Image (cartoon, rainbow, N blue to C red; front, side, top):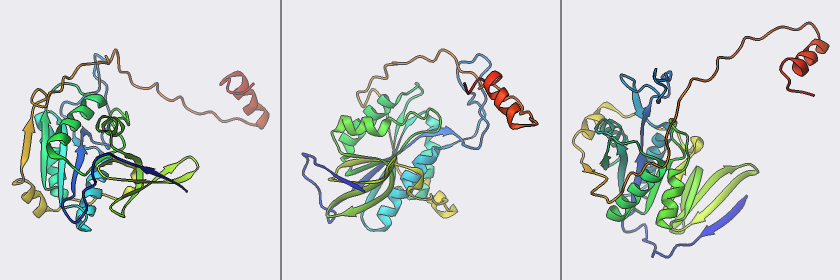
Length: 268
């Protein structure tokens, strides 16, 4: 197990005062929906498709709520960037236990760098002690926003967290690496990205869903936050993966080797 320390120039706020946690939430196509490519191959079909909160973001919200239940966090702010309909995912986060929400409303296509800059602008307004995001979104699988935010804020980061604990006024984040487990010790404020094994998100209860409707959502535009959504990438075409061909039975090992060598050409 490897232990590293990450120092930060900002004076650490003790937990006896006010620990504010901000959680990133993204609206994505539900993981159980079969993805369909648009006829013009410009992207995937989202019209009349079930949308949900990104599963890794659900884990991030759950971790924030658990910190509050442990009396570590005193306030949880859910934040999203997206169209007006993304308010639905914020309400889900509020029903899970977030106290209030921030919605940066935009219909424009956003890249991880855009979201990171918008989150930085909100962090400067809210001054959270801890930001938790899912390690990646299941639509683009970029796995970049948390790392970019940490770099922009000059904060320590614990990516792919499988365990989080509060020790000595700071954080210890355990993450899975190729060689086993790595433990990072860091001061606050910090950024954490949640991995699959961090926890199992709870279901929002009906009473909490009703309470969530009354919780506050602050809305901003990208212009109000001073962030330009400059497009650095252009999608040329989106296509379905090739259909998998059926298997074939062979009578012997020699025939199998022959097909692997001469038909599949995967061995010499």
